Image (cartoon, rainbow, N blue to C red):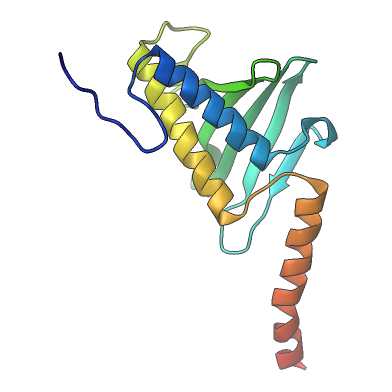
Length: 169
């Protein structure tokens, strides 16, 4: 019998572990976006000292929400999203999974696309484990998508900018 590596908060790379990861991702996404119904089709979370986080609602239905979550970078070839994740939340089951993980620079097809390619349990686990870690990082930075969060971020930014205005006068 072989032992699989365990990660804090997430079980081994088996089907029950993958389902647990889907549940943990849903919990983190709900912390990031407390009310999907109040969210506009496109939103940006801006936190001082962090990259802006972009969220686009692709599809809404009573039981599911499909969204894209990414940062946006620019180089000599133009703007590009990275990581470019398409996610589906199943509200009745309270799980969230990675549907596709965006293209790499210069490639046309997504490197992970659940709808067009059959992926192994290992590949699904890796894509969703990345989402789990990235959502934790975004939450620790203070990102969030809600009217109250946006008002708080704006107030903090005003307070942070205020001493600079006084020093310049």
